[in-house]
Length: 112
Length: 114
Image 1 (cartoon, each protein chain N blue to C red):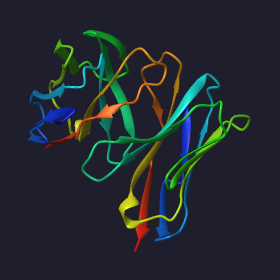
Image 2: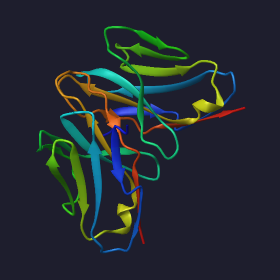
Image 3: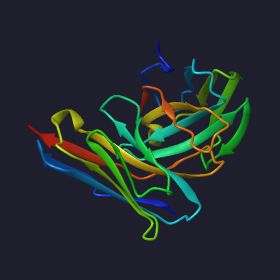
């Protein structure tokens, strides 16, 4: 059972465009929603995270939008750059749980 | 100042062999993990160790066994390797004590079984 559904599987964006990746979850006990970024040949690394008590969190060009009633959250990358080309994973975890549930990942390619 | 390190980075071996992957973290974290990433990039949790005790064990074959000699190390032993074991294996660690535990991943070990 996939508890965090991520889409699209792949995304191609032109430089300067907006990249949007969506995730939906089922478990209402989830209360922490991180996004991880993975470059080729590297391990994933935390990019940005949000708690359900806020609807949006912004860090530079990266923004998480969170809709608790719809059980959805999304990552927006503004002014996308070729250096943003990577695989992005959304995840979710419950309070007290050490293990995040990962989405299946989105491969983002930003063309120059 | 590598936070989570793994050796080897690449491992090529024949079916039926036994191999080990080593992992070390210098972050002082209490919990360490092993993940398997398949060719489609899907990350699957395999094991988690907290203070040298296995706290979760997903449905992985018993050919896989984690060994933790101390809090900073979590090695992965694989017996009787099969073609389907080919993947990238990531070690990770996280602090314990808060609700929100960031996972710190190692660089990965690409295992190829021939």
